Image 1 (spheres, rainbow, N blue to C red):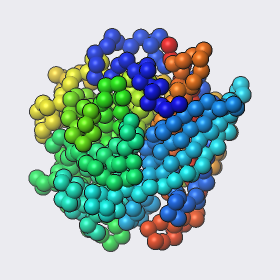
Image 2: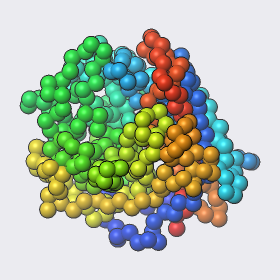
Image 3: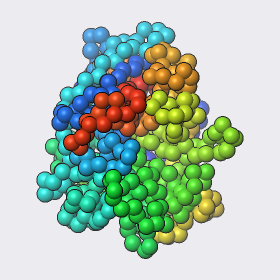
Image 4: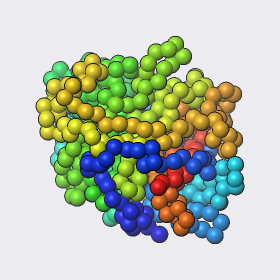
Length: 466
């Protein structure tokens, strides 16, 4: 059964619609980890290049089978293997099939994942898009977009939404921008954010994220003076089919709002667009979202950057935030924060079209303007819960091996549980971004070898909803 019909039948609210404050009884209840599955790190995609996991995820279809559940999903890799600088990786999207049997009590079922297809993104002229750091402005597509030295549009894709007609909305890190692609991967349009979010250097838009190709030029200055911080663009995106709104969330605060320091980058923004016409998005609401904080091993308070946004069938949103530099494949062994929170903007101030969309900071040095009421977050799933991870033979922390969760969990898809006794329940699929880390890699015409293999993994949780 198609997801669109299932979700539209119960969609009753949209981000930005006034509602009563949340009660404990209103919160989805985490019924636990029910399945987990993986694909090998050295898997090659349909073009013979290293597969690269998921920065974004979207469901195509979903059904209940005689033995469990099965469906088809889009999984979006980002700009390619880039440990030593960006490469001319032609950005693309993959289609996966995912199936798992009904889980036994106390254990997570083994999910079967299979790569089904790969499609490359192209611009309006048919030219492939590139993962190279943007060193220019591309004007060939009707909008001033991030441009590579090769003349291609530079894209660092981070989230994907599949619209009812099968076309795709993709958010990116470089602009940050929102792209509309056909189902075949051809660019149909692109939308840039308000001035406050565009990266500015020396009074001009400069899209570089300070990740040049090997031997390429670094931007001057290395960090933007205002706008999104390097590599902190539109990391999360979700579509509400009932309200026909598209919402994107900046990974952390803009430079002028405290985004120049990891300890003060908390007050990020969620932008809600009228998407009735996906080629003519209109900003209708914008909210400050105070990201979660946690303490590191030295007692310092740090901000957990946002990694994904997802929507529940009733129109409420889930925000995934996490720490960094901890997990299999990187030095740190124990993650301190990886959680999925319910995002509530019902009482938040709409700052769309105000002076805060210009160059007036809404949170100078990280302190929120007194006139602005922020959104709220309430934890629904703690991914680092070792009691749940143990159901799938996984863990967070020591021993630091391949069963220690990898660093980056960045994509979420929500599908119905298809349970007649609990018709509102859903499954939440969360996938990692493995940064293309493998001991047997090949990309952009060259082989490469990392120290470890970080597999693509999907965790499946069940949420009970009253």
